[in-house]
Image (tube, rainbow, N blue to C red; front, side):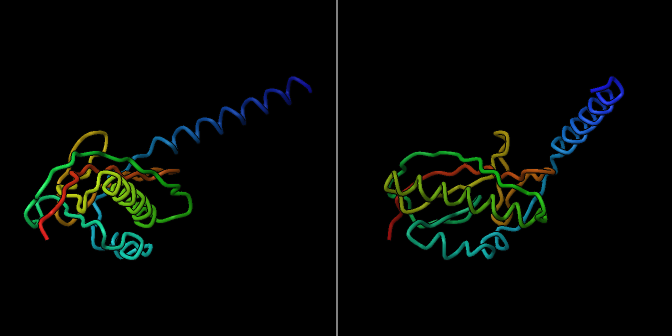
Length: 150
């Protein structure tokens, strides 16, 4: 390999690294509607109704037993997807994780669900927070697991 070829290869590698670093650095905060996320990707069917979900300050039936709280941070590949589509996938993944944890604890509901990106809470009855990047999109949720009065 000649010195000229090596310089060309090195220049291309550095350029690619710079483009990748800049692309990965994008982190756009989006507030998206819960209703759209629950309508996308067959979310209602996939989540079923064995565990109920209550966001922000939504009223709940009487809480009989508090079983703890937990948080989840889920990411999805956003390449070639609209920010909304990628965020809705990450949201569903986060909801499925909360549901799984609720079942492990014997809870029938997750209440006080808030967005919790980088441990900064954002509470809403109608929206969730998603961070969309060039390559990945992420949703972080936090909730409390309970048993509710029937």
